[in-house]
Length: 136
Image 1 (cartoon, rainbow, N blue to C red):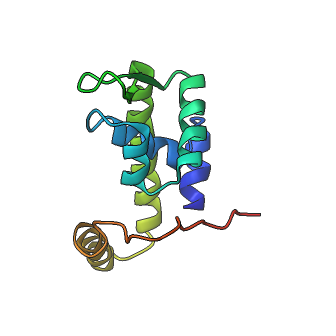
Image 2: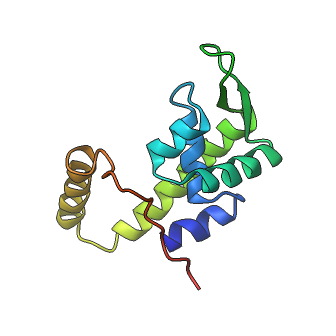
């Protein structure tokens, strides 16, 4: 995660911001829906969206389904950033994984994909969100 964060810094993008943008591209979601989908608390989501709006990567727009709700829309600049971020993520993943022999790499990737699509597909429900310790 540290390597990914450092690599994305060159684009002025955090892994969280990239995750918000990618999720917003999947459909018409409110910020609370996206926060729930990616597992961040409401306050973190507001700060992240404020920053994405400030740099022109996303906008809060009225929902086409509920005039009272506002949804997160990714701008053209944001879509380009998601694409560039994807290239960075792929490069970092390839660099990290090339440390392993091909057979071990395939087994690791297959195992992780299986965990994410099965056992870890839905976040566990907690009374209060899990806070991650900040790096020093």
